[in-house]
Image (cartoon, rainbow, N blue to C red; front, side, top):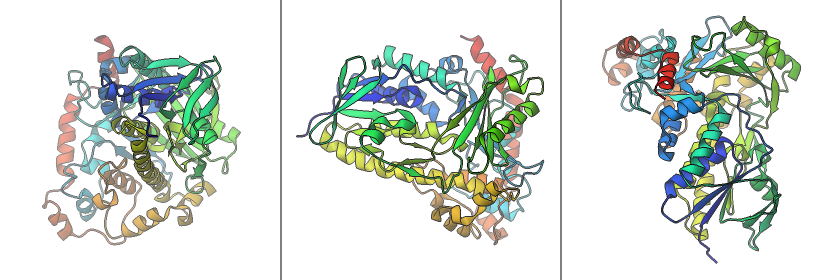
Length: 514
């Protein structure tokens, strides 16, 4: 039999479930090819500690039809232009660098690292190759208040309240895109003779038949993990972090305090702390390895950070909670007529905020390639699994680079990370190759790379890496002439700084035009 795919059942809400439901419904609205239903438990709250997105979220919001102003106002959102890493290189006071979202100038045609290295590499790499570093350094917004929605002067994503974001997506999915919403717990799974899922039995007594089931049930992975037995392929031998203690910190003056235009990632003895600025508060989290530090010490580290960064606030007044996770991904993401999205598919650590980007990427593939029948589904599933496996391996490799390139030698956590035996083979090979040539297009060859080679350059050279064989002046000339690589970037930054508002001012202007 080759039955048609007419009913898509998304199991689980949150950002993963509602992004998937919205993208599938928006792509197929009015076509009559597939109806979308989302069932979520009324007993599972959204974590909502503050979330970072990539610029891809602008495309996602446009595709599903949400106005940017509405999103900013309803999700307590702000603008994110990248990540500032503090203390990752050697742990000294002046140890900081930027990984911005904008690519280096002329990156498609000329490798800026060649010129930067040949010129001595004295100016911080990001400052030398993109004006966005200068914009970030001054706490400015990525555009003016009059700039059209989703357009920009420098590339950006968002910081947002995850709980409010899920609520906005839910309202939009149900009222605009026609997604059917059911609140109930899955009590049982009914299978077809061939092993496909036929229907879900709910604790309300309802029965939900479907043709394609999307598992967005978080780490439990109710369908792909518990039902289909797709094991979690651990990444703990490469990326050690498996805990996070989180908290929310109010501003001293919510109307005037600056909103950071980047995620601040501060290295600690056995992990790192994220600091995300929303319009009304900051979301903090200490990500750490339980093999290198105990929970109470990790919690005390975050309290100390709160005392340091918010001296007017009593650190003990913050409500802290600890979240455990297993770093890794499923051995198969799409099994028979079930596909996992979000934490059901896997989770590593929040470094570089890849979680929501993976959700967007997976959901977009499902929406764009939604199989019309079961025979086509088998082909789509095979391609989906291959692509997602590739992306997970690249994410693991790229995140490990942040640790492998470090010169920190002040504890077992950093020494273990720097040990090449804990590196993926692909990273060992690249670190060897980069001794003579900088990363460029061959290091991220696919059109749909999640982390382009520019990201490798920002981290590699931000971390202080210098090749054994430096770039020659002749290579510099061949890559774009004798003009200093930093000239145009700094001139563009100067012009932008004179015109762009602060992040707080832009958020305030958007709120005022409601």
